[in-house]
Amino acid sequence: MSQQLSLKDEPTRGFWRRLALVAGPGIVVMLADTDAGSVITAAQSGAEWGYRLLLLQVVLIPILYIVQELTVRLGVVEKRGHAELIRDKFGVGWAWVSVVTLLVACVGALLSELSGLAGVGALIGVPAWITMILSVGALILIAVTGSYLTVERIAIAVGAFELVFLFVAWKAGPGLGGLVAQSLDIPATNPKYLYLVAANIGAVIMPWMVFYQQSAVVEKKLRVSDLPAARIDTAVGAIITQVIMAAVLVATAATLSSGEPGAALDTVEEIANALTPSLGVGVGKLLFGLGVSGAAMIASIVVTLTAARTLGELLGYDHSLARKPGESPWFYIVYAATLIAGAGIVLSGINLVSLSVGVQVMNALLLPIVLGFLYLLARRLPQPYRLQGAYAGVVAAIIAMTVVFGVYSGMSGIWG
Image (tube, rainbow, N blue to C red; front, side, top):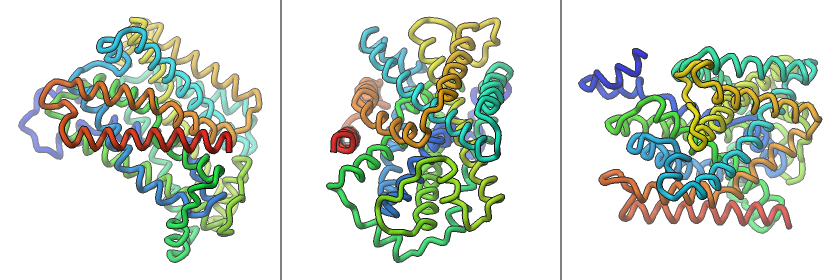
């Protein structure tokens, strides 16, 4: 409560003070972006293609920022969630189209996160059912007992464990010459390569990120005057998430060091072994487990909150963490039921690696709907926050290229 009051009552404080108060939604959503599925996708990319997908990680930084900056604008100016805004601007039918798209992405992401946690548990000999009970119980407890700011702080603290992958990449000792040479060697006509291109695009630009960050900005009560600080929050997050993705890819490629495509990794244990041999078995498994667990937990919080909030926007039930379970029962019921259902599916024994890469490709195929609505809504903002002029043309071109390349790569990889 005191932090929200500070945002309203301290307009004369310095910019850095305001940045510290505003920061959070961008960093949380970007740390969640480097989720268990993204880590696995990056590892698979390094295993199969060496450093040939590294340049893509760099190219995706400004694209990711451009997309998420639009959600920040929509949140601070319109003060409504994404689904609610689509409903008000385009009608209930189109709102449900966007929400169904979101729910598909959220379910796929949640399965990927919970499977990642089960895989980490298996590394240390913990049965999957025990891992699911502990993980789902902790996630429900975090939401039920915490305010938005509490959940945000917990999410950032947990997600910070992902930074261990930077240490892992450094210890892997990649050779600069080979790294640069392979980064520029792009087999653009190979269907298997294109499939992983689509997976990486889908691993970075996810439908639920748009919905979550806009809702978080609204729930945190950020104002238009907070927009510059919120943009920095988003930019820092975009850099961090792609640095982590690049670190996982580099560590895997450097460790396997075959330089030839085809060294696929089929299990979480194989990925752990490929990422951490220079650290020793015990330390390697510990760091890998911390990194993946942090990624999976923060993403699980984000995607489940996103699903519960967005349904609330359309169905009309209260969907704020500021409300206790007795005041907002449906919000917490949907949140808990989603986690429990996801855990049940994970316990059925699905293949984690195939699922995770497939989910990212699915995200790429859903981009036309998600980015299309995002662009149109930004074009309808009031002045001076409307997306317009030359920048609107640049954004349209970037979104169009991302959508076309993501869909083309995904379809080529599937049918090639």
